[in-house]
Length: 303
Ligand SMILES: Nc1ncnc2c1ncn2[C@@H]1O[C@H](COP(=O)(O)OP(=O)(O)O)[C@@H](O)[C@H]1O
Ligand SMILES: O=P(O)(O)OC[C@H]1O[C@](O)(COP(=O)(O)O)[C@@H](O)[C@@H]1O
Image (cartoon, rainbow, N blue to C red; front, side, top):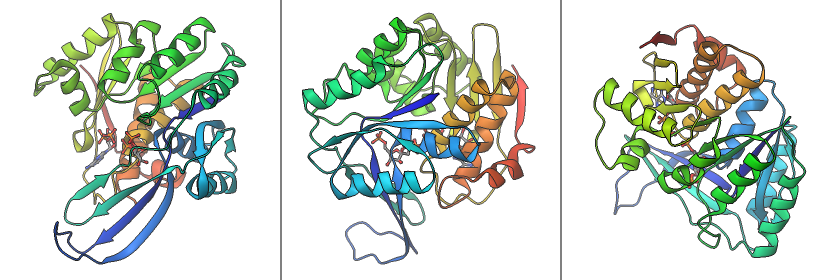
């Protein structure tokens, strides 16, 4: 079974305006409320790819209930720890450009953390864990390392999509892959990376620190997948970008589903990119139909 862990889920409140102006009264013409947070998005796209997963993490209050109801309505299994304070609501403003405001998240206490760790202790080498997204400020900064260490000890395959410090903390435990976007990769090395060679070299350094594969997503510029032996570069088709929220998570889902379902590395990577781009071109996360429509337009070259 695939388990996604979202330590800090969110309702994503997406507001489309005709032009967003800071400091002015803006009116939205269309709004959506989505069950969000990185691991949850991964589970939602896995479902579209006909791949089962269970959502783990913390949910609280009416936003937590909304998320649980939405996931269950989509026939996605949920086994979250219930917490006292409210799950956050993140605001995504769509005007001429995209503006996001992500909230810090609820209070999570030691008992809540233990409840989650106990669930993870039941997993085995047959399972895959995806840990993704920020941590509420009330949680210990080494929680990713703690989960990664547990996965390593129990031979559970695991994948990580999070910011710099969290990514760095899991490398010694050998994640199957990590997915920094290009900005996060630059932050990890405190430099700008403007050529394929520079991105490849940075990814290689993360392999040497313990990652089995590094998946660098680059928005409309596609992505690069670096392993010890191979370097694949994906180019995406041009299209109407509608809402890129969840694009990165969609790539993680496409890759995890591909690896789990026995696709070749190239096919898994192509599927991952198709998921990311199909999501960027639609309001919500991509459907299977939208992914299949685009998959043959994804170019993969071996560098
Ligand atoms: N403007 C875009 N045009 C086409 N595809 C996009 C665009 N933005 C994102 N994507 C797709 O989504 C993937 C992940 O996007 P990215 O912005 O790098 O991730 P994250 O959301 O983690 O920052 C990209 O590799 C690409 O496949
Ligand atoms: O946990 P973080 O880093 O605050 O990110 C949470 C946000 O990221 C998302 O999971 C989208 O992530 P991506 O656009 O990187 O795929 C939203 O659903 C959510 O609001």
